[in-house]
Length: 146
Image (cartoon, rainbow, N blue to C red; front, side):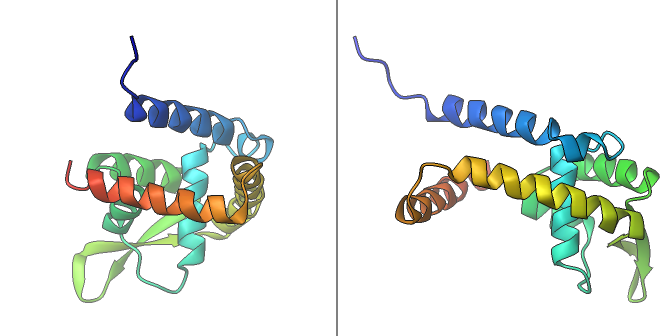
């Protein structure tokens, strides 16, 4: 009897393994118990410095809930990695900015993220990686709004 493929379970397993690898990175562990996902957030903020980035941008980019973003931002702010700054046109909005400490931690986390990306891509041809990216985008589109 053949079993139906369980793609969701496999993606969940990969996600768990990916999170574990990111969280166990030596560079990240040395940076105040920073999690791998915090490293990706620092990377996002670093890549978008000079732009107005708000919590909702993190929600959309990382597909996480408002309450999760709020908790993560508070924690990262308490560690001195980011700061929130009011914007002139709407006092309710707070843009997110890296601190000097956040930039330094980003430097360490970026090295670890780069090594993790190399590990993920190992054994794949450039064409296979292009295809994988297309498949992952299609899966995200299929799950939008769920």
